[in-house]
Structure formats: structure tokens, C-alpha cells
Length: 309
Ligand code: SF4
Image 1 (cartoon, rainbow, N blue to C red):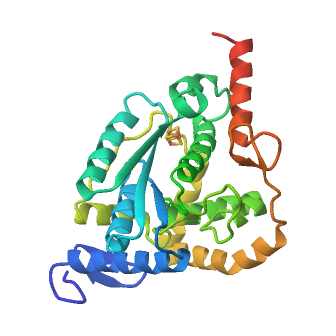
Image 2: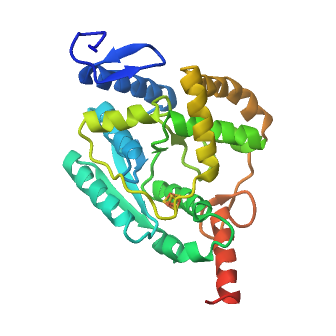
């Protein structure tokens, strides 16, 4: 098959809009939508700093590269990489090496922070203590805390994440079926600025996972393809399969989920009282006396005391 725009050999068929695209037009197709999202989500002034959360996977590496290519001409905007080392032997070190080299190649400042410095614990120590819960539950809470802390430390105006269309559609549906309206309203991208919380933006939120992978490969972006030994995405996988099935039957379903969510968001946000945030002992904003991360650390320490083995 040939590209519907220029007639060169196509590398992909975009089912939801019925077009065959060659590598050049596929890259332009992705970049155009990412530019649109950046314009929609971000309002920049000279001197602003943008922190990009980069794990080394295809999505966050593509997000970093795209931010750099789209905003790179603006010398007055500083884009910096933030990488979290969760302390997972045999997994994280390799991806950190890839991120560091890429940042040095494209001239982006690299910042690294570990769970070990932030919470005096690594995921390898958390995993055996996590009891019936998945280690990912701990990791997700610690990572959100750590990224917000690191973004504040570099004075970032925004924190960019690599969430793609599939991730976003899954999160919307998971929170919707759980009836967790508050969480649904806070999924982001964030419009309201809450004291101490760096607004998160998601430039890849309209880019399907497969396109993000193809973009990284076609644009020659290095990425880490390893699987975390603690990966447990049982619930998310159910939603992934369900949404993929719907997408196969009716191409465009994921876009429709996001579009419905975006239309509901102003109503949802207006129905939720603005949070009265306090400062936790770790310095992060919290609704109660302790933030979620410190609560989990306390429960892990309790478990250690009662079951030292
Ligand atoms: Fe953390 Fe789970 Fe991701 Fe591993 S799979 S890095 S434990 S959230």
C-alpha cells in the first residue's frame, strides 16, 4: 500500500481515519496532534521551566523528544528531564543509562531522584513487605510524590507525563466504573493550579499506544523495552482488553471516550469543592495530616517492626 498523501510506500494504516501513511507523513501526523495538545494545555512565558517525567520507556522518551523539537526553538523556555530511580535491581539502571545518554545527545538537563533518598527505601525492599497489595500501588504513590517534589525543586511550571491515548482511556473507564468521581475529575491535564502541586500535562493523550511505539521507532528515539519484575497490571489489563475489543469493532472508541471525558470535565470539576491542602511532614501538599506516601511508609515501617523477617 502507498501513502494516501504522497504515494510513497506506507508504513502504517490508521484505522480510525482510514489513511495509509508513509514514514514522513506519519511523523507529521503525530507531531501535528502533539503540537495541538501542547497549545491547548500549556500557557508559556519567557523564563518558564518544564519538567518532563522520563522513565526511559517509548512514551516518555517520545514526549521528551517531541517537547524538545516543538518548543526547542524557544530559547527562553527551559525543558528539563526528571527521572525517578525506584530501586529495582536489574531493571531501572538500564533505562536510566538510556535516558542520560539521550538527554546529553539532545542537550537537555538531566535530574535524577531516587526513592532511597526521598523515603529511605527501595522498591526491592518494599515488594516483600507489600502484603496482599501489589508493589505497584506503593510505587505509584511514591512516584507521584517524588515527581511533584522534584518538579518543585527545579521550579517547574508544568510536569509533563508520557500518558498516551490508551492509558488515558483506560484511566477514565477504570475510575468511572469504580465510581471514583473525585479521581476522575483530577486525572488531568490540570487547568487549575493548586498550591504546591505542579500541574501535569499530557502531550501524548491523543496518540494511541501503537502510534507512540511506531513514532519512537520511525524517529529513531532510543527507549527501554524491559518489563519491571513487579509489574502487576491485572485490573488495567482487563480494561485494556475491553477497550481494544471495542476499538476493533468500532474504530475511534478511545477518542470518543476522551472526547466525552473532556466534555464532562468542566461539570465534574465544578461539582468538587477545591481541596484545602496542608503541608505534610515530607513537605508535599496533602488533604489530611499525612500525605499518602508518608502513610504508606509508616505502614511499611510498622510491618517491619512486627515482622522483622
Ligand atoms: Fe513501579 Fe509497578 Fe511500574 Fe514496576 S511496574 S515501576 S513496581 S509501578
